[in-house]
Each structure stands twice: as C-alpha cells, then as structure tokens.
Image 1 (cartoon, helix red, strand yellow):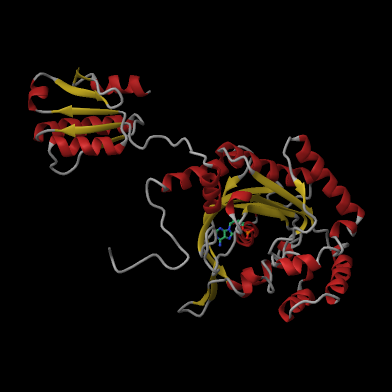
Image 2: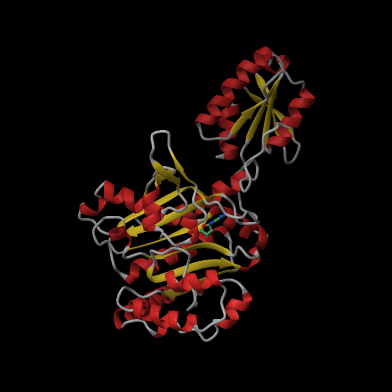
Length: 420
Ligand code: AMP
C-alpha cells in the first residue's frame, strides 16, 4: 500500500463498483435528454462571491462548508458547493436567455465539494446530476422536473423513496410569514445560535433536526396559511399536474431546504433506508436568483440528485442494476503467431461494438484462462500453432463449457451472430 490515502471525507470509485455510478448518472440523464434539456459543463470553481450572493451569506454551505481560497494571482475562488448558481451564471454569460427560446433547459453532471463532517452518505466530495429550466414561470415546468426525477429513480428500480413538496411563497407573502414566524420563535426556549438564526433566516430554524427544537415547533405558524392567492394557485396547479402524472407526493409544510434562493415550489426526494442523510435529491423554484447575481428577472426551477446517495439507496433496497457485461469475448493466444492473429480479431470485434479483451503478458494457458474467467466473458477464443496451421481457432462457450473449432476467417462473423 502506498503512504497516501484519499483525503478525509472522500472515496475512490473503483471497478466493478464504479460501473454502478456510471449507470446511475446515465439513468438520471436519460429522461432529461429525452425532454429537451441540453448538456452544460461549467468549471469546478467559481468566484467565491457568486456562491455568497447566490446560495446565501447566512447558509451553512457558505459560512461553514465552502472550500474558498485565494489564488497565486489574488483571485478569491471557491470549489463549487452546488450547481445552480454556476449554471445560471454560465447561461447569463452566454446570453442563452436572449436567444428568444425560453425556458433555457440545461442538465449537468459533476463533482461538488462541501467541507462537512463526514459520515455515511455525507462526503466532502460528492457527485450530482442536475437540471435547470431557466426563464419561465409555469407550474408545468415545476411538474415536469419532479416527474422526470421520479422517472429516473423508477427506471433504476428504486421504489421506497418519497417526494416531499412545499411552497415557500414569493416576495409578496413570504415577508409577512417571516415576521409571524420570528415572533413565534422569539417566545421559545432556544439556544443563542438558534435565536440568531431566527433573526437572520427564521425559515431555516424549521429545518432544525434536534428533537427538542422540533417539539417546540409543533405549533409554529405554517407558510401555507400565509401564501398569497397567486402562490396558492401556482402551487395547486403543480400539485394537480404531478398527481395527474401518477406521481405520488407528500405535502411537507416545514420543508425549507438549506439554500436561500428558493421561492414557491420546493421539493425533496427522501429515501428511508439511508438513516440521517436521507435526502437523495432536492430542488425548487428560484425566481429571484438571476437578479441576486446581477442578471435580469428570470424565474427558474431546477433540481440536483445526489449520485452517491442514490447508489446507497439502491443498495439499501437490494436493487441489482442490470449492468452490461464489460467483456463479451476474451482472446487467449498461445505463441507469437497466435498473438498477431488474435490481436487482429480482437480489434475487429471491438470495431463491431463487441466488448473484447486480450490476454496480455506472456501467460501460460492456465493463467490466461483464469483471466478469461475473471473477465466475465461469455466466449473465449483460444489459438495455438497447431490450430492456426489448420486454419482454425477454438471457440469456448464459458457458460456451457463447450468448445469447438471455427475457421479463422469465420470467427468474427460467428461471434457477431452469437452476440449481435
Ligand atoms: P442540496 O443541494 O444540499 O439539496 O443537495 C442535493 C443532493 O446532493 C442531496 O439530496 C444529496 O443527494 C446530495 N448531497 C448534498 N451534499 C452531499 C454530501 N455532502 N455528500 C453526499 N451527497 C450530498
């Protein structure tokens, strides 16, 4: 073992496990690609101010969890803790919102960084697949995103996740509620830090996980009783559209999420097999974010699903993904002439899209057959000098163990028809 280890709170994705992560990313992306979302990639770091303004100065993400640093050139940067602010920044910078085709629908996949206390399901480096629909205020768009996330999870075989839904109101009704909540919180027996939070961002207190705090919050005023008519109607339509799509959800009047930019629709996907880190994904509407980072008014909605936790959720449910075999054909040459011939055959198979691998290094027959077994290949082709002199190779079916000679010139077509 080397003296170096992966940094605290991180882990490596290693075969064969890593195939699951690729499959999860692919499964989340597929419904988005199918629904008009274009792929976007942004840098792993941004100007720190983007997150301070976008995610919110008082959020845990910005105050405690951000990897912020000064470059040798004196720039203040931060590793991205989330995707929405970056994607919106990029869309504004490229003027995508001016092309007259709103909403701009984008999806992304990548690494995110938060300096958190590591535990199962909570890492300092994790990966998300996300989607953002920028520049339209339409309940059908909120519904679309929730339906697509549901479809993604279901396509993976996940069953016991739940969708929590809430509305956080808008700039008309939220301030009224905020004040009512603040008045209520001031009358409670809370520690100093929580009282300070009640001053700066009272909604966040609703998200406090401590049982003694939750108990005191039982009679807290609820935002849904304060929603203005426009927010109420909007939320009702989102609920109707997802219901009509057959997607089950639970109203959660206390769902606030840990980022400041949300307005109206907010939702979270939770999985009960994950212990305390139960959120596998989340999102919502962020009608004010564009203006907060210096852009025009662009009402938008989006989500991010955590790849790491989705894999944990699959394991918790005992779902085995149907992963394609990484190798279908394994070639075992015995001698130099056979090496040349079989290497050519392997290249031809690969060109046809058949996953093929080769016994490298000068292994004997026994060692090479062990490699063939380990590769999981369905067929092995073996050839020695005598086979080639007769113009054949030996084709072995690794499932049945049957072996027979096939002409050197026929072997590729034969395998193609078997595996095609
Ligand atoms: P958030 O932006 O905090 O709502 O995160 C969206 C999703 O990303 C969560 O539901 C998780 O699945 C995932 N996620 C967030 N933070 C972490 C973390 N520290 N470790 C692993 N996954 C995370």
